[in-house]
Amino acid sequence: MVSLPALLAGVGLLCFPAESALADEPRNATEPRVMMESGEVTQVIDAFDDGDAFDINVSLGFEYFNKSATILRETAINEPGLTTGNYTSRRLKVASYSESQSRLIPRVDIGVYKDLAVHFAVPVILSNSRKLAGIDGSENKVGTALQGAPGEQLFSLPFASPTRSGLDYLAAGFDFNILNQFRDSSKPTWVIGAEGRFSVGTPMHACNSAPPGVEVDCANPADIDRNGESNVTDRAGNLIEGVDVARRDPGVNRGTIGLEVHSMASKRLKYIEPYGGFSALFQFQQSSSDYGITNVAESLVNHPPIVGTMTLGMMIIPWENREKFGRLTFDLRLTGQYHSEGRDYSELFDALGSTNARSLRNPEWERYRANPDGIPTSVIDEGSSKIFFTGLTDVQAYGSYRASASATWQASEYVKFQFGMGYKHDQAHLITADQPCNPSFKDDIGKSGPCHSGDDSGGGSVSATGVPNPNYRPTINAVGRRFAVDNSNTFDIFASGVVMF
Image (cartoon, rainbow, N blue to C red; front, side, top):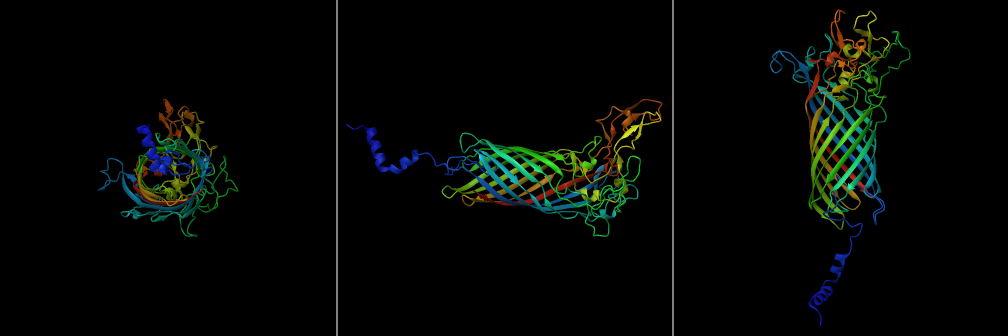
């Protein structure tokens, strides 16, 4: 006699033979797993998977941004909207700043092994332009907003930098999925990676866009008189012959070597995939750039800023076509950045670096030495180097906040497109924040110069508070003369196309 379970099993095989068999079969290795594949932010191509031994993606991206900001300056002028005359504020408007840039980013990603890929990128700046315009009549305030030393004008308004273009840097890096939801649906997807960025070609030099014959566009820092002749002297004060002070190229890259590290994790929950992570960018100056001119031990700050980034976002996947490998993804993202204090190419890099004002053009001595007369202070060491002003300035630490939205459409198994836009706001911060003394060296009164406290006459004790910072220029760095940036807003758009093999 046939049992009831056996009878039901037989009926099932007769009625649903194909469906039951397929339900028990494993997935094909190349079959997309809908509701399991991670989104683009944590997706890493790989190799040596079953049925998919090799992956390579070739992409071309385009980025454009437009930035606007207000340049302010400290003042104690007793005027409405400024101060009462009893303290220093940063309310004196100097200029309206604008910058626009378009950049092309060719990139290749190569799968190396399971969940491991390497990539190479060559960002190319198609055009970068910067301008300063007068604001509230600041172009006529030569004795306040634009003043250098008495009788000097730091720069004139309107001011335009030359349009720069060229190779930004060469990049090489890797990405690795420590965890992969595609392989284990109980786990999130977690990617870590790093990228090296190597500046090649000519680093940026401070310039202006004055017509030829009016004044030198990109003067060498050692050309104090702006006449194309050397002003570099040896230790005995004699003019050094053969020093090249010819006009320099504007350049386009930062003159640094960068190391970017990042980590990002996401977890797909059917139609949404929240994610979060962080990245950090460390930059190391190259001696061939203008960083090298000011890179001396006595300098208080000569390193580029470190940039740390925290990211939170959510991908929304409203549609997928499993058979045709199609997918539509929306990405909503919030980003917070911290820029540490560092010497950088500020909004006034070209305007200050190409100035004719002698208070900035005249070099400072690298160090001081003990007074030969026996007085417990020090004098200029004329055997040391002269440090020239290049336009690079000490930029105060600040935060940035960015919101962006993008859409990615995977049209087929081999083609994918992305388009998005974003908005970023930078906190107000000083951009000429150098200090007169470096307190890291305060054990030698003979090298302290003016960085000391006590009785200078020799009748009392004197203690060193540091050594003079050769990058300090009172004209722009003294409290009450410093420049700042406020109302800094950037709008950007970006797009890319990817071919997947």
